[in-house]
Image (cartoon, rainbow, N blue to C red; front, side):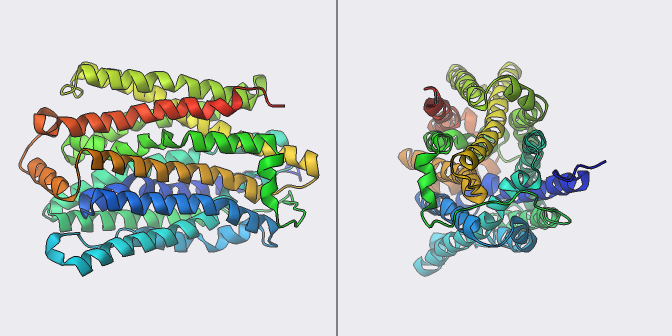
Length: 467
């Protein structure tokens, strides 16, 4: 017989379907938008960096503000989750509607292309956040049972799997469709729009399932005090996980650099090879998600969430450093069988560590909510879980800016990208050409070393025992 203080199986399943749909939408944006803006419609690298970093940093900063607003408001989380899925899906497709940037367009048209990309993305970020905060914190409101809450939070990697699938699939499908359409920059732009729109429709429909038949059993109690940000000072768990997230921002470089790394080093825009290598290097995330669901509840029962978080982040340093050293030894031969096997093992470790770290981070935030209930009698669930969306977005924003800065340092921007695309279209293999050796080294460096440094920094706030 179903206990009255916890969610039903139908509620659990609908939540996981909705979470998967929402993550499909996020996976499309996080994996493809930066590539689309810089390498498909040829907006200069510095402008792409500004668009993505400013938008994401702005969005990250406003997340706690919106979380506080939701916590103090009278609406339930399910109200937001009922209204926002379809608008989010529509805005996702609109992010890919810009025309190709070109010197032949004229300054005014190119300005409109850049400005519209910025505005549409800002609007997408705002609407996405209004749904993201409630769906992130929803498990904490569906049950009063701590064990059941941990189980549901530990199943969140199912949503991340859906995000990974969309991230892996969009680029190869778009490349194949572009080739069928003719292979020009305009054809590739149209192919991305069609592909993204299809994924957005699927994601939006699934996202809509989240709130159907759901009942919030825990009241997100708040004292109504306007200064809710005091919790970042008074709640030690919330303070530490926030600092940890900021220090570990560049762990998101793995996802930011994966697409150009696969496209230009391994696949040379071949759709089949793009799918193969993207899946190969992304397999670690799937393994990590399975590990999270199977073992994180057991690990966190035996050890504290904070200890597991520290261990997995420190472990993540090793495979990232080894992968860059492997590239330095075989700069033109990473596609050979031996190096592919070695890189597969290392990316398996990286993806696993990242997935486990993300899951445990969610549990730590849940711990912060429970601690606040004991300290002050308040449960500002939306505010606290907005920290996780803040961490994700600040990481994506700063990683996009760092990547763009890296491209700018080696003078790889609009005209150079167009020349590289033409070189690849004529059958060239960039990794074998000394002309592109600096670009290849930059891609591998950005893919690994910032992640290793950030993994160490994210563990630092928890290395000292919390008072």
